[in-house]
Image 1 (tube, rainbow, N blue to C red):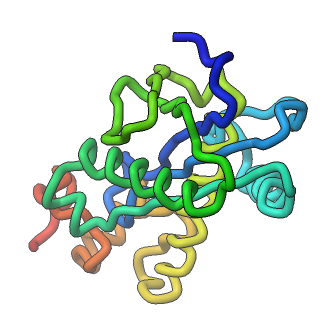
Image 2 (image 1 turned 180 degrees about the vertical axis):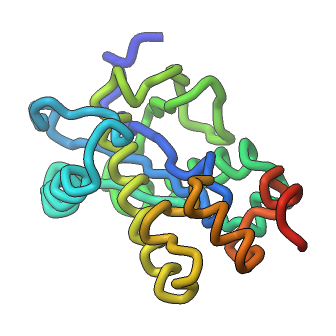
Length: 199
């Protein structure tokens, strides 16, 4: 499907499918001026945290960029599974974007191999965060939004060191889990939590 006939296209990506704790966050991004570019932009996973923050601030303050974010909590992830929670986060991001843009979004480019519940035409692109500028931008918006949330959670639960691993299953995180057990942020349906912690 060609996207040339569509005027307002949103790129969509998520952050946080893999972690053992915290929400999954999605971003839906529209760039109003097609000439707007960021040189050498990469998928958020291939950028340093400092570089992601720098680009995020550019995007946040640029008049040609609009986005909406959506998040789904660890509690809902446990109820409906991470794939369905990811789709729900993306759907919420689109709805929040629609509240901001003056013109209705008429096409969605989604990172992944699945669609979402929306009446807007859409196309899924496997590894879209490596190929498509709009999705790369969405990946950064989602990643920084989620990382900042995990930093706030670190202040509530400093013993887990969410500031270091952002909820991913690192050696440090697993050591903290073995020492303290899970907190309310942990995804209890995920195997490492079920297998190694008393819940």
